[in-house]
Length: 301
Ligand code: SF4
Image (cartoon, rainbow, N blue to C red; front, side, top):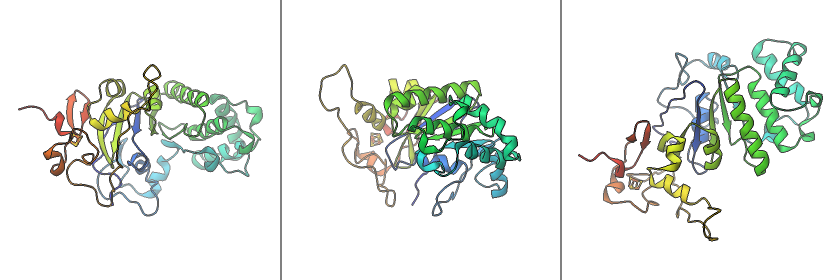
């Protein structure tokens, strides 16, 4: 099964890219492939992941280990599961520094304090355990760990899922602030389009393991070109609109063990026509830098 197929995009220095789509559309698999942290039954069978003159898809594991955390770090979803419950947070952050920056735990303590201040945690709490922190504070600890080795790229996988709306806003604000201050590039994975709209310059909407639409976030959200993106945006409640349930996209995402012929969205698309059932649409450029994989966007001849 190909969980992700024919996905291609660029991430410039200081830029943020949002990967969006329903559960199982391939966004986390795409992001984990970048640093080859796929589950045991997953592998990259073709393609390139170019970073700083190297192809991360093919370099040796030992070389990749030097890139993980020091160049590309991850903020995992579910901070309580990702943090070790029996270790103090100072130990956990210092471990990341000691492992990747060749420092002793004692030498790393100064940097731990710096990092806690950077993410808005009072350093006096450094010797507390994860369960002593709220969900939002634990997510701040995860961000501090990700920044431990001064990476160039941060991958944030659903960083605010399971947090309440006020805390979500604080964490997104923190990520945006750090991204600007530290000139980081960021890949933000979320099923929530409003999270991406608040945070990212560009967005890739994924469907069935492929990119359905890609472009500047503002343009994609204000003028979506793919029927799937249009459906996703319509299914958001409008606080000024009628008090009805918003329309949803009927049907289920395709089974990637046996994806349908033609356009992967055709079984759910209200605009599907005969060609959609037999021919897969390429990504058409509808405006400079704005692409949509839909036959309706083919240039007229
Ligand atoms: Fe719908 Fe056809 Fe476009 Fe696919 S190619 S999104 S089925 S109109």
